[in-house]
Image 1 (tube, rainbow, N blue to C red):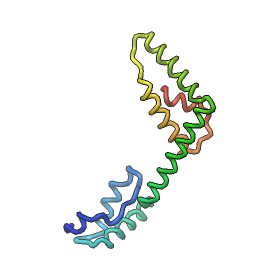
Image 2 (cartoon, rainbow, N blue to C red):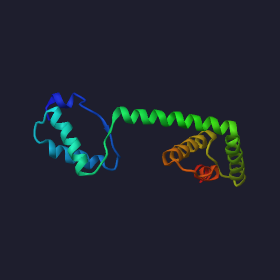
Image 3 (cartoon, rainbow, N blue to C red):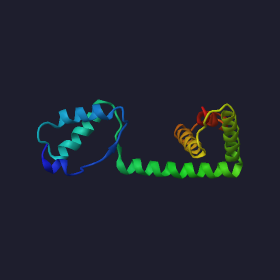
Amino acid sequence: MNAAITDTIAARWWIAATIAPELARQARLCAGDEPDLGRCREAVARSAGLLRAVLTVDETAINRASAACTRLDSMFDGMRKSGALREFNAEYKIRRAATIAEGKGYMPHHVALKRLKAALVLHLMQQSGKPMSSILQQVFR
């Protein structure tokens, strides 16, 4: 590949990590020797089609992530207002005390909060109607 192509970002797409290596391999085959930028882009699009993979444009992925962050912040605020966060903290304290009583260590509170946020992200992505108790089970398993 020539230096002009390797030093330039022609486009960025988001794709499932499990498909990315095969898509890149296919695109290299489709592009041929010494392709220009247009040919590279076409090769990526063609390869995605062959693999039945969805390419998401960078701006779209960033907008979706930003919207998800806003929803997560809103959900966390709602948990604070409804008392669900108090329920989470109470459950954390009970589990921590029980584990310490057994002479074992327990995850720090900030780790439990990170796990809670990760579980909430999955909840938002799946648009799940699962109750809070099932989300807590994910955090404390």
